[in-house]
Image 1 (tube, helix red, strand yellow):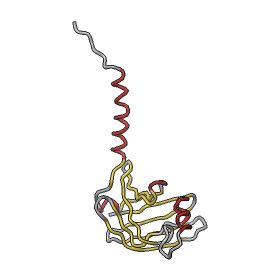
Image 2 (cartoon, rainbow, N blue to C red; image 1 turned 30 degrees about the horizontal axis):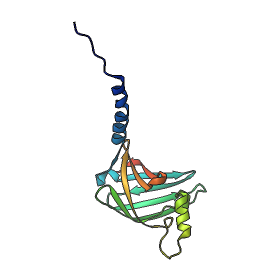
Image 3 (cartoon, rainbow, N blue to C red; image 1 turned 135 degrees about the vertical axis):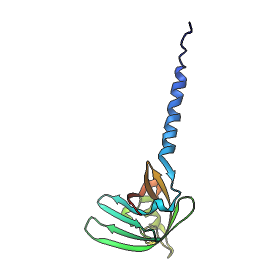
Image 4 (cartoon, helix red, strand yellow; image 1 turned 30 degrees about the vertical axis):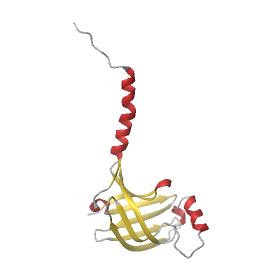
Length: 152
């Protein structure tokens, strides 16, 4: 009669970090298809919100919906690049949506060049987080657009 052999306890504990790593890798990846980024996105900070719609024809509509009820709208064009990169010709991320380090950088700028919190050219990345497409604006501060409706 053979005796059943139990695996060493340490080998079971070694599987826990490996399992967590695999879950993290599966949960987040770069979007590789232009069609996957087409749709409507929201970015919210407090009671203020930005609605961004990317159309299949390469145009976008950005509506900044302020808590006061005021709405600021911009339109422009966007392009898809290799590796999940998106380029916008005139995107606006107002100060209310920017982290402190961006507001400080804008206040220190002395040249006539554009500031982060003024409408201007943006190049950002699109990623899929647990199945939902996001567009990172200030990745270090977790400021990102989240897809709320996929486009056609």
